[in-house]
Image (cartoon, rainbow, N blue to C red; front, side, top):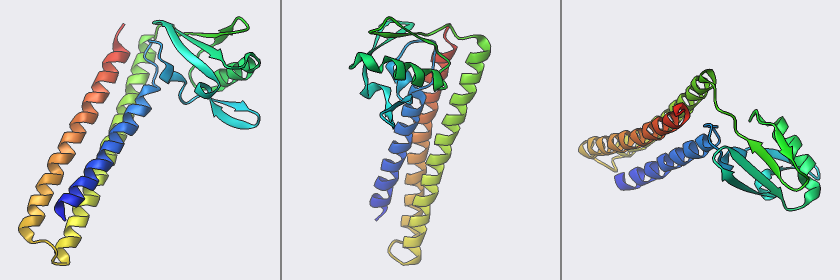
Length: 185
């Protein structure tokens, strides 16, 4: 019983960590990354479509993203999608390839991005603590139904707390790494 609750909590906490990593991949660090375009959607025949489904995205230089559409006619809609997005980048094209130059981040922008990262890390911590609360609630229900003893409840509580500490530490490390990346000049 306790192992099942612990396993479910572990899987959910792992999901929270993966969601944070995916979320932070889209935060601009002053370095080019195809992940910056993961959240950019373009209107393709009336349907919002991710850019990576319409084009090949490469990083030929540390501060340049090259986007080569599968169909040259899609250059205009991809450019519009990038301009509408919250990336703050201006695309330029030569008729075949769209180039996005990643400018140096100002100190003010770095601080703002660091605050965004801290907020997302805190959201992940809250999610992990909510998972802990749910797991402990399940253990208490098991004890009320006499499926586990009070000693098992204490043991389960300690194991869930260790698991929570482990995943909060992972989240903090991911956040610290991303902030270090952002603050790097």
